[in-house]
Image (cartoon, rainbow, N blue to C red; front, side):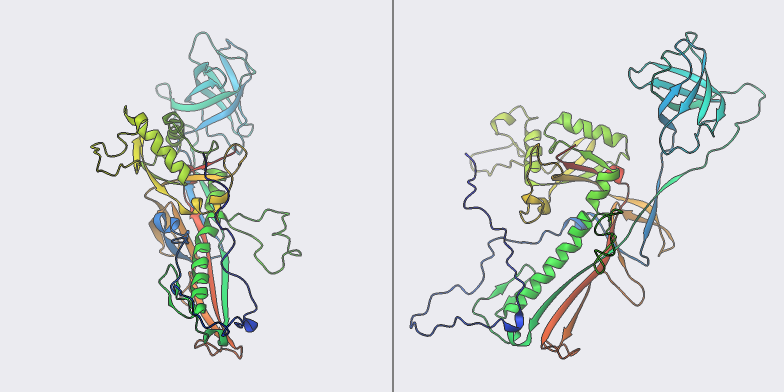
Length: 473
């Protein structure tokens, strides 16, 4: 049996956009002499409705003075090319190797270095010494150490990596040197706005329902609830915008100034976009076995090998991890020894796990954003749900970067938010009141308008250490 689709959960928003200046109450009824028995305080049937918490747990916020944030990330220390070809046939004693890897402007191989050359298809390999290099053409000549010569044919696609060098006695040193290269990344902040408005008359209207919100607002003035909920929504958007933001592609409607003359026209690189582009993606939904995690661990070995990682998951992924770990116990199939192993009839059985170690430390944390049905929790799952995110692996700790404001190297979390600020203007979280009601005296508008603004972007440092779990290849 399954949970019946009807009655279901409500998705319609509780807030409405109404013309407040004419929003008078007209349903007072004095024809009935009987008063109903009322519960004055609102019942919080959805609990804490906010979804923001992720970036507060794993990141930090720092000021920035520019429309563009740039940072450099280290490249690989050692040289390897994976799309190479040999000019010689099998059994040849020497050959010319052509490097065809994309984005390689000058090969970092020098005469005298020793190389390992392997056939990508079957692993046949040779070791040789480089005798000449043509950086312009992207080729180098190699002489093989093996008497049998080249073990693969001229049609093979090869991988080449350097493992050392060898020179004769009394010879000159290495010809040429290598210059370190960084990969430069950037992101651009976006401006996020919201507003709440209430007429002066409605501010003076008492209600019979005692309002309550997640941040503790109470009272019988209904506009207090609406203003506080606007604030809570805005704070959620400050986080979800950093998660979901994408840059406007050339030729898109957003980038078209004639179609979009007022609103944002550039976008930003959110966390999901960056990890999808240059991180690691598990495309099978949820990994449910140790073999699945072993393949993820193998990929992490090829990246930064960060020792501690936190996996932020939806509810189904959390249960799949619990079931996987419980199955490693010989009694796990009967459900008798999850988590706490000294069970008795009066003990509440712990059926969950907070983390595990297999090569690296993995800690598990539920992510409300992925469970909330008004956000990503309402997206379909399964083979047809391409793109539905079920979790995100985030490396713990920090990395060293150059901070342009401090003027020195500083420790920064892998995920952190940069907001626009200077000595005279701080746009991290701006709020101001306009109008002529609620204490404001800025205009003749018989209303109070509460304005919200922030200008920010998220920096995802070392995206190669992140893993996005989603459906779809």
